[in-house]
Length: 215
Image 1 (cartoon, rainbow, N blue to C red):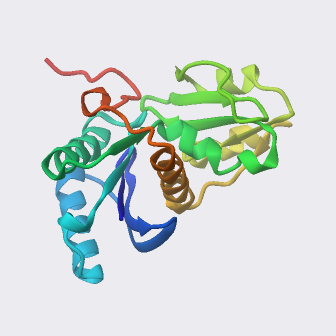
Image 2 (image 1 turned 30 degrees about the vertical axis):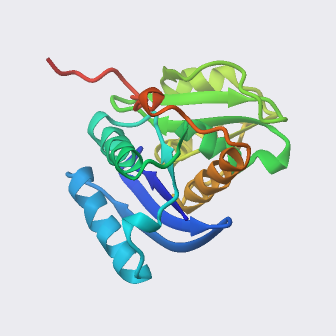
């Protein structure tokens, strides 16, 4: 029984799944307090399924890039549960999850997530799904200049910049729900669990879209 947690962005989600099938899904749009809303979603999921934390055998986490407080909330809760229950944990880059939704199309892909201050986090993948470099941060115009018309741009970040993208010949996947990203998180967690490729707890860290401006 897997617990999946994604608080990378304001469009957060949580699910309990087994053998690749969802037993329960919770989604919400967070405005102020990811931590509190995550605990509410957890409580609701366990209440609706009549399961307990002891029934969870593995954790799947979306690590970001995302906002400082948002992505940190999910990662902290996931790590705490994994440690307390002594169960494996599997971390996944959120841009990889957004791209995975569209990889069956066998196209070059650029996934984007808003990073604040009119810039986006993004990553580019070849048609086989291999990354073509690390996460980057840039404005939409610079990202579009980098891409060619054989690229599909996808991810939550397209919502804000649809009009800019439509002025180019680059193909765009409309983003209307966090559910496909959650399903990709489940599929990739199952894949890693099957191969025994768990993350070390100490290696699980939030990936911030921009460095936190604190201290």
